Length: 591
Ligand SMILES: Nc1ncnc2c1ncn2[C@@H]1O[C@H](COP(=O)(O)OP(=O)(O)O)[C@@H](O)[C@H]1O
Ligand SMILES: C=C(OP(=O)(O)O)C(=O)O
Ligand SMILES: [K+]
Ligand SMILES: [Mg+2]
Image 1 (cartoon, rainbow, N blue to C red):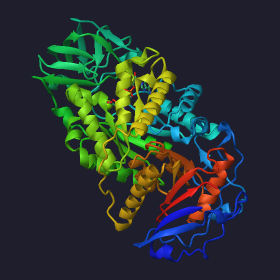
Image 2: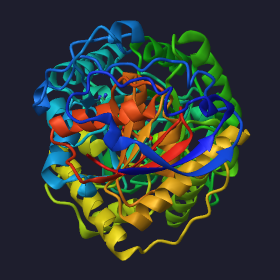
Image 3: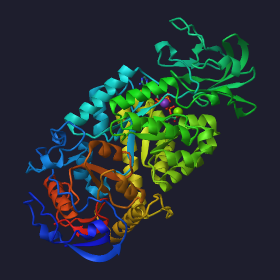
Image 4: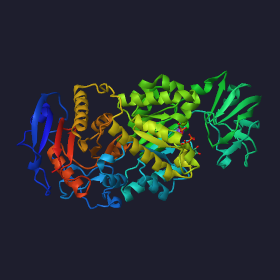
């Protein structure tokens, strides 16, 4: 028995009960059990002009049941076209192997809603290590183009893709650009360099011979010696180590260490004068350097899912990059993530986020550009704006910094992770913890367990302030979608349903549901692997790849049957379904 709320459009007005295409190949239960009962009607503009004309597709062949055998044998990124689908009489549905295990173990009410991004580095670049992260819940693998060679990154991408193909994961790939900011060289291959109090170090644009002379640091920015002044404070990695500039000799800048510490290869450098960040010539450097453009070409060629842009200053660069990608990539479905890590990005926050497909609170560099005590409020603001503008947001850097060296986090780190989860950020990111730390799997496990615990606490206690979610779309059809999603989410909370189902071609309806942060998980069904991987970054979405038609009733029948066969749902579960083909809300028990 199901109940539904339809928003009738000229296209779906013709979609009468009698004309519904007969659902095919579902032998598990009769379709009549699902006949929707109409409870409300509203006329509106058109949703999808093809909604009543496209014949239903059949879900493509399935043979996998175990977590390791889920992936169908079709390696291409797109479904079998409808005509071919009709030829198949069996069905398949793809879901990330780790998610499937989690769904079965914990039941879907308790699945993790917060997504996890892991930076891949020397500690995790091998196939086995990547697999361990995927099993541990990594949703997105991040490669930082600031480090390593393109060849190295290419191998990592290949391994992640192989993991997805062979082991049934759906890990997305995010490429992060180096950006034009000033940083140290790679320390001649050393893993770190220790600066002691009072030591004199030379920072220079000169390339030093190997082995690197003692107490020398190469700097990547040609104007460095000209821009700094004697008396300036030089901060490594936002102040992890500090120096005072004492003398300039040609390209060499002599500095005295005032706060000792460990310097990592390619650590970021900023200089301060009279208590303010010096932003002279380096602030004029382009956001995307010529090297970044080559890396972006590489990312497009490799088909990465996300490109994160470092040190974004304005919306312009995002728009430029998006048109560049659209012109070059076949299906232009690479999402652009704006890293908020500079004073300029904070100034133009709304327009940058509006232009982007998501944002990252890049606290590492942000904390080097604004006083540390201002970082938490900036984080809260960025997370809130992203939610309002319906863009996924990642909270990044130093979440579990001590776990680079130790197997347990500090209480303060757990509190920091909890706060990001409580703010309902879409995703949390590991940097050094997973790239070069000693306990990458343990760090990921901490993010996972803290996320699940805080999410549960939030649902039980309902300790949240209701957030006004403004309209994001411009057309009347967009408004209908937004209203449907917010109503569906509200109904799901009030009725205590087990899951929201959303059938979405582009992922937009799924993101609108995610934005409402409902109590139950959201099963997002989409027909392309790339959309499914992109949905991996968004809060509460469990992305499935399945081919589906514009006929909701047959979609539901088939999905129920496939999910039941896989043990992911059971008869009696209460579900609310929406789709971007037919503007309706249906409430039903799984037959
Ligand atoms: N591809 C890589 N090759 C070597 N080391 C890496 C790589 N990616 C990350 N790392 C190491 O992990 C640390 C943390 O990564 P990340 O936060 O992404 O970079 P950064 O510290 O430059 O901001 C880096 O400082 C570097 O030591
Ligand atoms: C994520 C960040 O950027 P990157 O690691 O590339 O410096 C950051 O600065 O916090
Ligand atoms: K970077
Ligand atoms: Mg940064």
